[in-house]
Length: 206
Image (cartoon, rainbow, N blue to C red; front, side, top):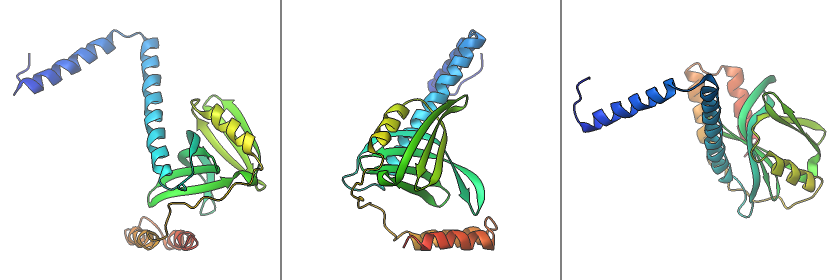
């Protein structure tokens, strides 16, 4: 038996040994099921954190009806890209929120601009397609959880004109974000073209 400095170190070693012993007796099927449960728990935790973060940028009287975590197919600097985030159905609109290097990305889809919503199930998870003002918005790799409530609520409100909520967002942090962009350019993380494109996007929000 190894030597220990104190009781706490011994208890930690004992717990790890016990866990290792239990895992060694698991069948391949049990091991696989355990891994799936861990992944599901990780998604639930991430969904909760993203939903809480998104809620800070909603209107005062805006309430989240349903939320799912997934990957949004979009374009960044003219190139195809994917962004992991949370798709929300609120009492006013549909919202996609994602954290990024310089804060967050928030895209809103008023129900009055949505003409259809389609849900498909694939091997990698569920997929939602929204037709918003003639554009196809695709969110893929969605877990099962609240997807039914989200899709049903959006379907129910398609074409509905709702009051645009006054959000908690401000433009005060945009100068700071531009400063951070300049720092990233100086560090060689962004080139001049990328810097100017992102700077232009931020200035349009003012």
